[in-house]
Amino acid sequence: MHEPQLVMYEEEFHKINSILDRLVRESNSKSIFVVDRNGQLIAHCGDTENIDSTALASLTAGNIAATGGLAKLLGENEFTVLFHEGEKDNIHISLVHRKVILVLIFDERSSLGLVRLRVKKAGEELAAIFDGLLQKAEQGTGPGGGADSPFAEITDDDIDNLFRD
Amino acid sequence: MSFINYSAREINTKVVYYGPGLCGKTTNLQFIYGSTQDGARGKMISLATETERTLFFDFLPLNLGQIRGFNTRFHLYTVPGQVFYDASRKLILKGVDGIVFVADSQRERFDANIESLENMFENLKEQGIEPGSVPYVIQYNKRDLPNAVPLDELRATLNPDGVPDFEAVAPKGEGVFETLKGIARLVLQKLKEGAAG
Image 1 (tube, each protein chain N blue to C red):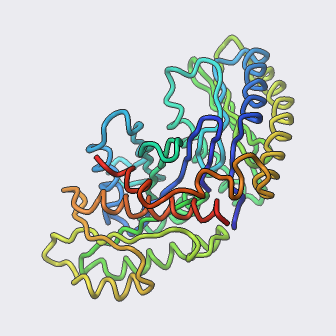
Image 2 (image 1 turned 30 degrees about the vertical axis):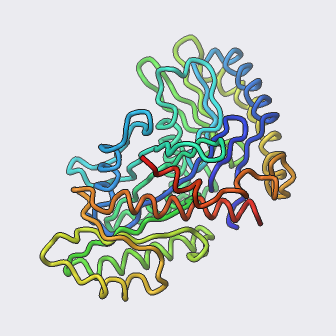
Image 3 (image 1 turned 120 degrees about the vertical axis):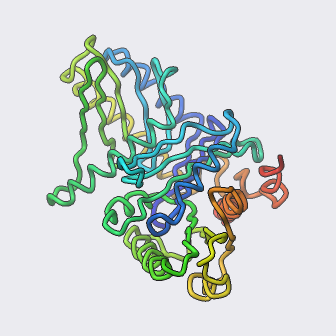
């Protein structure tokens, strides 16, 4: 298999959310999103109601992928931080552990310096959690892993039912 | 790679529509978008040039409903078909769970189909994905055109392995949902095999 499957469990999900809760406060940002490199939204926090988070996740991953392509052209391994400055809102995008993407949206109530500082510490904590998750996924030791997985029992009827009008 | 979220009880998967330029990949997504209810789909995003050729990708999130208590979400992407956008195509294949190869049935595009299919296999290998390991279906689009190549001839060239294939006229929606169901079925079966193995 080319890369391990990302599986999120209740325990890690709560840990991630509490890190994000703290980060949104300490960095004075408006909202935070954690996205995997394939464009799937993993978690979010703060004022996210007026943002299409699914689209944001997909575009962010595209952005990181394109920037990664540019980095390789220059002989760099990766550009780990992207910053987009708008008239009101700014986006700070950083790669955590080369696996997941941390996105912070902030306005004039915060600053790039503060965001960078807070992201660095939170990024290390998030990296440790994702390390653990990937290990669980590789060993199949998480709850619901292996034969306990709800997907082991999927039948053709289940799949057919999805398409019934 | 699919993402299973036990906390939110969601399965998220990524399906990529691949094929030569102007074969109808974006049209497939537009038809699905137009015929799906608001609650079951998100916003469709097209990163296109001023002449509406796909520049980077199209993206359409779909919610197919529940399976074993988990919400089944499919993220549909298209790649830019034009030959010179190969770098972008490679990026979009990252983490793919299923592929729809959209072939253009017109005689004039016969070679373009072969070139695109070979390009797809090369790009998959570059990502470390063995072509046989990822769920994959073929759609023969533009079946209504007078210069369409007979189905047997397309099959013999583009589908020697006999993967599930579908005839389509994408602007009218013919074959579009059949293709989507075809790939969704394979992706979910693969998920089941992964769980059982």
